[in-house]
Image (cartoon, rainbow, N blue to C red; front, side, top):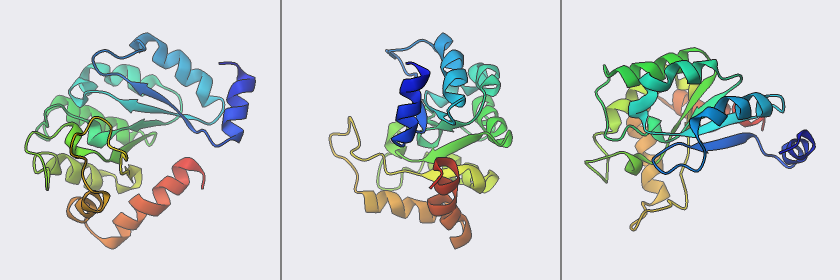
Length: 184
């Protein structure tokens, strides 16, 4: 993609380059840094979906990225991990750099316990929101790709009441943080 094409995409509202790094991913890890360097020049972030259990192994590479990193789906720890797990700690460290955001979205992507409350993802979501509400985002993940029985967005929105304490933090996650990240 040329700089001219990236400029046109930026003018049209594009703000990130998505990397889907699960088994069978279409792109290899070794192009993450070159792409991050190129899109950073246009003010874009890297949108990353990976198995959160790999954050400890990928921490050094992810910490080197220029600009902003946005992590999908509460980190997508497949299966959920205890809060003292090295990969969860690695994600917290990335957040502490001030350049990493996490989307509180799609608990069904990593939960073993399932709906309605995805209880096994709740400790991770609550810990992330408490640790850095200024780096959290809410997302619906509509239209819920790959879900035979997709959840109702209102039910997912209600999870925010359980995961995040206080109206000020919720407002920050729903309004202020996306405005900052996406330049609304």
